[in-house]
Amino acid sequence: MRLTWSRLGTIILAGFIGLPALATVDQALIAGGWQEITFDGKDANRFAPDTSGGISVLSDNSVSLIQMPIDVDLSKTPLLSWRWQVAKPAPPSDLSTKGKDDRSLALYVAFPFVPEEASAFERFRRSVVEAIAGERAPGRVLTYVWGGNGERGERVRSPYFGDSGMITILRPASATAGQWFDETVDIAEDYRRVFGSSAPDPVSIAIGSDSDDTLSLIEGVIADVGFIASPDLSNEAAN
Image (cartoon, rainbow, N blue to C red):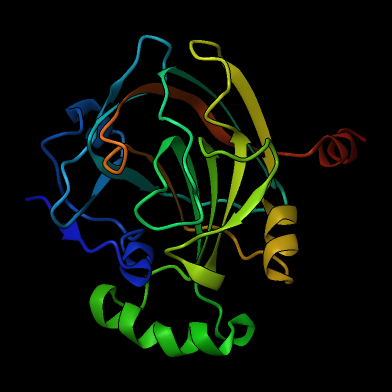
C-alpha cells in the first residue's frame, strides 16, 4: 500500500517516520531499508539502484521522496558526504516560493522535535503534526539541493517547513550536467547556524526530486551517502 501526504509543511515533516510502500521504488531499495513518501494528487518519481552503486532518480512531471531511518552520533560523525550527478536538470526555480520550487535532486536530514528549543509557533504546530504522524515525527529538517536560481552556498528558508527548515543550494540549476560532484557538509554546524542551538542526532535522511511545477524531465544519481568524522576528530582518535 502506498501512503500519500498533503504538501502542507507540517505534513511533510510528519512524513519522515518510516512508512510502507511502494510501486515506483525498486524492490532492492526497499530491501535495503528505503521507504517512499508521496503527495496527494502528485505522480511519484522513480527510484532504482544505479550502476555507480548509488540511486538513480527519474522525475517526470512528478514529486516524491524515499527516506530511511538512521542511527547517527553527531559527536563522532558530524559530517555528511555524498556525490551526485544530474544528466537532465530542472530549469532554474525559486526555491523560496510554493509552486515554483522544482529541484533536480535534494538530500534531506530530519531531526527529532526538542520542545525546549522549539519556537512558540513550532510548539503550537506540533499538536497538528503529532495528530497525523504520532510522537515520533521529526521537528526540523535541513535540505541540500541541486537546483534553484541562487548561488552555491546560498540558504533559502523553506516555504513548506517555515522556521523548522532551511534549504542550502550546493549546486544551482546551472551546474554542469553529466558531471559528478562531491559534497561534504557539517550537519552539526549547519544546524547550529540555522537554528541557534546544538544539533540533536538526526533520525532519518531522504532523497527527492521535484519536477511537477515546471513539467520537466529530470534524470539524476546520488551515491555514497554517509556520515563521517571530521579531520580533527579523526586525528584525535589516531593519537
